[in-house]
Length: 266
Image (cartoon, rainbow, N blue to C red):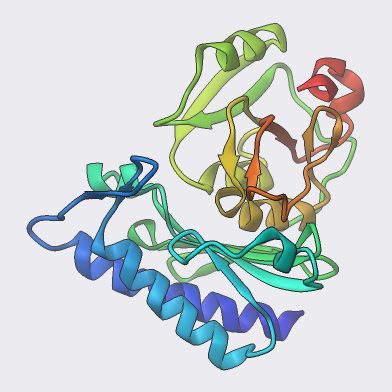
């Protein structure tokens, strides 16, 4: 798995260079997809590079990308392994130029993320991890090992991360019920990564979200012993519409599920 991570971190870094070339330009043309979500040339350039490189290094593993034509579920459900890619997660953050956008590449084994990389090129920050390998963060020239959770680690009150662009009133109501004392707003899959490095205790999302938005961050969180649940069950992937329809909650310390039973109902 280490060899896989070395390849996909390199690919993510290269895709980030493609994105930054557009990001640092004078203007960014924004188009609308069929679902009215925004797309730019940076999304397309990142997608094309990732597609080429994954096909070069892993020709036998199929790829699902946000910017690729849909693959029928009847075909996908036969796959043992596949890549799940968001070439530019947080396009709204990219357009607003706040730097909180990422390249997400995840390896799925049937319906479980087993390896992933989340790279924020504008922030020069990369996270990666895999089952049986652990998780890591690189910021600038410094690499930090993200340690697995221990049940002894706790503090008064809970810190949550939430979406900068997709926050919902019902989410804040639930966080208030849990006694959350601070909500940190940030874009893209960085929310998963902040939980994985224990800068926040949990991330709750109530509204539907595409699987390519979550898989890489989920893999990193799994690697440090965290959990991602939907209605009390492990969050699964490769669904017919490639969407988490019921939302989810993720924690780095599973002991929180016993201390706060409400988390198991979200």
